[in-house]
Length: 326
Ligand code: ADP
Image 1 (cartoon, rainbow, N blue to C red):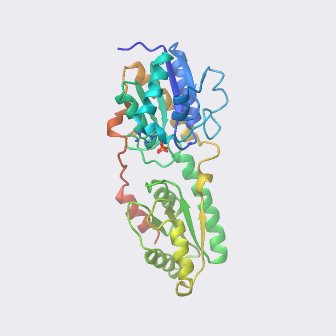
Image 2: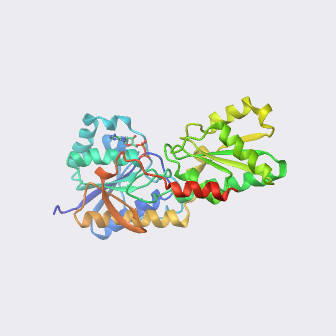
Image 3: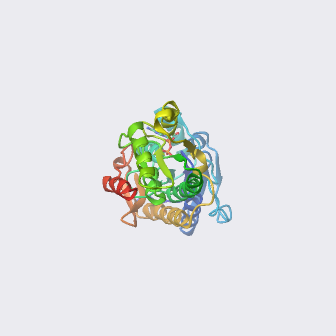
C-alpha cells in the first residue's frame, strides 16, 4: 500500500453549504495522521495552475458555519481535455502529492475519475445541492437548499392566501427533480413539475384551478429548473392564456439564493462525516472511489459507477405528492 505523506484537497463545480465542514474534516483528520495538507484554490482551474496553500488546523478554524467554500470553486471546461489533466498530474507529481480529495458534484467526480484513470490516487466527496449524484443518497448542501426553498414556499403561501393568487416557484436542481419534489412534498405544493416526468402547462393550470375548486385559499406549483416546462416557459404560457385561466399567477425563481447562507446542522454533520470518511478511505488504501451516504452510513462507491450516472427519483414519492395535494 502506498504510504501517504501529503494530500491535496479541492472544491469544484457549484458551491454547496457544508463544503467548509468537509474541508475542515479532511484537513484535521489528515493532520491527525501526520500528513501534510495542501488546499487547492478554484477547483481544477487552480490545480492546473498550482494555486495552493498549506492548510493547518488554524486555517480551517471558524469556517463550519459559513456557506460557500473557503478554497473557492470554479468551472474549468478545459479539464475535459487530457492535455490539461496532464498538467495537473505533472503538478501533483512535482509537489509529491500522494492523494487528492475532490469535494464536488457529478461533473467534478467525472473529472476525478478521469484523473484516477491517469493514475492519480483520488477520493471524491459527494457535494452538490442538486442531489444528482449516484453513490450517495443525499449530498452535502441539499438540506440547506431545501430549507431555503421551504422558507420561500411558506412565505409565498401566506401572500397567496391573502390575495387568492396562484404562485409558481422555480427551484434549482439542474436535470434532477429531487429538490423540487422534496420542496413540494414538505411545502404542500398543489403540483410538482420535474424533469423526470413531462407535465404540460394545461395540466399545471388544471391542478391549480382544481385546488381553488376544492376550497383552497392558495394554489402553488413547485417547478424544477431542468423541467421541460420550467418556470420561464410556464410563466410565458400563463401570460399568454391568462384570459381563459381566470386567475393570476406569479412566478418566483429562487436561483442562486438557494446556495448561500448558513449550512444546516445536517449539512455540517454530513460534510464532517464525509470529509472524515475520505481520509479513512485513503488510510484503508482505497482510491478511485466516492465517499457518500448509503442507508445512513458513510460508504464508498467506485467512481466508475458514479460518474455521469443519473440518479433515479422515487416514483412513489412523486405519486404521494399528488395524493397529498388533494
Ligand atoms: P458539479 O461538480 O457541481 O456537477 P460541473 O458539472 O460544472 O459541476 O463540473 C465541475 C467541473 O468538473 C468542470 O468545470 C470541469 O472542470 C470538471 N468536469 C466536468 N465534466 C468533466 C469531464 N467529463 N471530464 C473531466 N472533467 C470534467
